[in-house]
Amino acid sequence: MKYIQTLLFAALFGVALVLPGNVSAQSTKQGVATVVRIQGEARYSTGDNVWHPLVAGKVLGAGAVVQTAVNSTVDLVLGEVPINLSYPSSTTLPSGLSAAPDPNVRSYVVYNPKVNQNVIRLFSDTVLAIDKLNISDTGLDAVGDTELDLRAGKIFGNVKKLSAMSQFEVKIPNGVAGIRGTAFLISADGSVSVLKGSVIVSVLANGQTTTQEVGTGQMFSPGNGSPVSIPPGILSSLGALFNATGFSSSQEFHFVDSAAKSYVSPTCGKQK
Image (cartoon, rainbow, N blue to C red; front, side):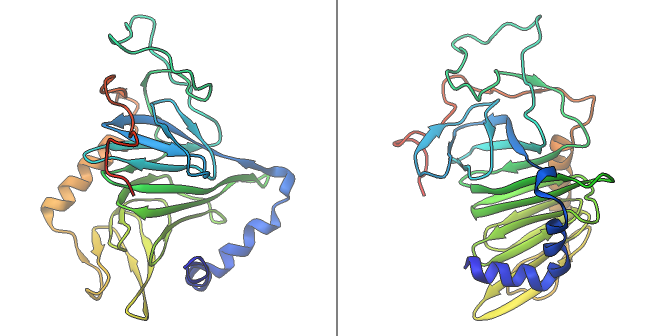
C-alpha cells in the first residue's frame, strides 16, 4: 500500500516531491506536534508498539502514533518548536492533578492558540501516525514537508496557507490526500469534506483509482462519483469545528477536562 500511495501522490504532485531535495540538509529542522487538548482517553507510541498515557502538553516527533478511545478527542498543534503550556499564576491546579513524570510533558495548561499554527483534531476511535514533520529555511520562505498517516477514524485539519514549495500529505489505507492551506475533514475510508481551500484525494477502490479535487463547500465519498455540495447541517458543524480550532487570539482553552481519566489503558478503550 505504501508503494501505491507513493505512486498516487507522485502522479498528482510529482514536481512538489522533488523540490525539497533542492534545500540543503543542513537547513532542514525536525518539527514537533504538541498535544494541546484531550477530552476523554488517548495514548501514544513512539513507533515501537509500546503504548503510554497521553496527556496535555506532551511533545511528539516524527514516528509517533496517537490513538484515541471511544468518545474521545485530541488536538495537536504542528510547528517548529514545542508550545510552552502552563497555568497562569492566578490559577489553582485542579484537585487530584499533579505534575507528570514524563520530561516531555511541559505542564497542565491554559493556552491561547495563534492563528498561524496548524492544528489537527483526532476524533473518537482514531489512529494517526506522524510520519514526517520537516521544516526547511530556503532564505526566502519556510518550506514545510508534513506527512500524516490516518490508519483509522477521522481527523479535522485547520492548516495555514502553505508556501508554493511546501507539501502536506495525509495517507489513508486506500490512497492519499494532498492538502493546500485549508480546513478539511478526512476519514480513513477516503471520504473528504472541505470547509475552506481544496484537497486532492486519490483513492484506490475495486481495482480502480479515483482522483478528485474537493473544493470549498464540497464533500466526496469513494464510489459516489464527483464531489457534491456539503448539506447545510454538516456545513454548520464544520464551521463550529473551524471556530474551535481556528485559534483566535480571543479564545482561551482549558485543556485538561478530566484528571480521573486521561489515557487509554490496556483494558480501557477500544483497541486496534
